[in-house]
Structures are given as C-alpha cells and as structure tokens.
Length: 332
Image (cartoon, rainbow, N blue to C red; front, side, top):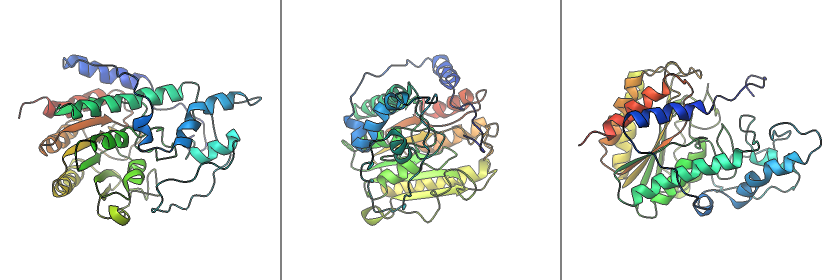
C-alpha cells in the first residue's frame, strides 16, 4: 500500500539477479545455505510471532473470499515502551486479529511463499555469520527479503525475520562485543528494538530523517538505548537529499563509536536505497560513495559480515554492490 493505493512491491526477484551477476563477475563463489532450524531466529524473535508467520497463509486461505495476501484490518494500540523486550502473545486466535497484532503496516502482507522466502533469507544470514565464526575475515549474505524493520514480534517494511539481528546474536556466541552498522536509507527500527536494552551489542543506523521518512516514529538522535543498554544505540539521521559529504561525515562518526565501543565483530547492514537514482528519493549518493563507506568500514579491522537490506533502483544496485565489495576484496 503506497499513498492509499495498492501497487506492485519494489522488492522484485530481479534485484537478486543483478546482485548475483556482480558476484559472478568478481569470481566470487556463491553458496546456498543449508536449513538451520529456528533456534537462531528464536534467539531474537518471539515464538508466537514465528508461529504466526509459519501458518498465516494457511489460516488466511481458509477465509471465504480471501484476497491474494494477508492484509490486516485492525491494528492494536502499542505504547512504544522501550523497557519491553516483546509483547505478550496475541490474545486472539482469529487470523484477522493476529494479522493486526503481528504485522506493523500494509507493506508486508504475507503470501503463499512468504514464510519459505523469509526462512531462506534468514538461513543466508546465519550461514554468513557462521563463516565469520569459523574464522573468515569477511562474508556477504545476499538476503531477500530484507530484515532490519522486523522487530522481535512484528513484521514491517517488507521485513519478516531480522537477518542482521539474528547474525549479530550468533556472533555474540564467540565475540564479547558486536556492533551493527546500518546504512539503509530507512532507520533500522527492528534492529534497534531488539538490542535497545543490551550493552553488549552496539546498534548504529545512518538514515533519512524520520520526521519526514519511514518509519517515522523511531530513528531520532535522542534514542540512545534503555536501562543497561543506555549508550549502546546511535542514530544519525540525514536531511532529505543528503549527498556524499553528509553521508561520509556520518560514517566517520559511526566508525568512531564502533572503535570506542571496542567491537570485536561487525554486522554491516547495507542497503542501496540512499542512491540518487533510487525511487525512494530520500538521499543522493553515487555508486562510488558506497565504496568509500566500505573503505571506512574495512579500516575498522574487525571481522565483518555484510548483510543485504534494501535498494530498488534495478539498474544501479549491481554497481553499488561492486563498489562495496571492492575494498573487502583488496588485500590490506
């Protein structure tokens, strides 16, 4: 749903085709991850939420005259309390009620293959994290659908399972302090919510100012964490139309915070929707700007998992990925 109209999703399969072409041109071997079960997902997501995603379409398809996707009719009030890890389970078994409880907006309607797609995307992030745990310095997880808007118990913004958060939690099994740096043009509100009360995972998000951009209600500079997690969340909102200089200045601030945090490993959540040609139209980065960001990230000198997020300008996302991979493929 966009501006009151039902429109085709921007998250089209061709996005993956363009990204795979870049990997092939670089001579990078791609691997399809093996099934890993739900244990890694349950480390950051609530069981009732995963149960809903797994059976939402089946329940929906039993409704007479159902539509092609699960779209909620009701949205319960949520207080936005930062002290809560997750909400209680949905108090109704009715699919319409559960849809309103577990789906945060009208951009993430589950369809017949959503659960399978979300699982395959999540398994890719898990495999990438495992490669870092096994000693690789860098890895890239080509995840689709994206994940950074998925909260512990809510889907939103084309996201169902939070790939970056799941990967960060897995890395905590080996590394004492893990950072997540998210440069998608939209605030990583799901990732922030999952780690907002924890001091062991630093979450940093550089994004378009939420006063004028999705997700609107989070991503402001004053949001610094809660309780034990106070100081372990950093938001760096950018003005609409921000270009190279503003982005790179924010990346420098982010890099300093990661160094000060003494992160042992990093999840680099990369979206290309800050590109000047992206239909979202919120920022104005060029192809090479993503390469400069990657250079700063690599210079942090910690094991880094790149997790793919957004980016919907089909003709440029391949070039952007190539720019990001360049510094990581260059010997130090």
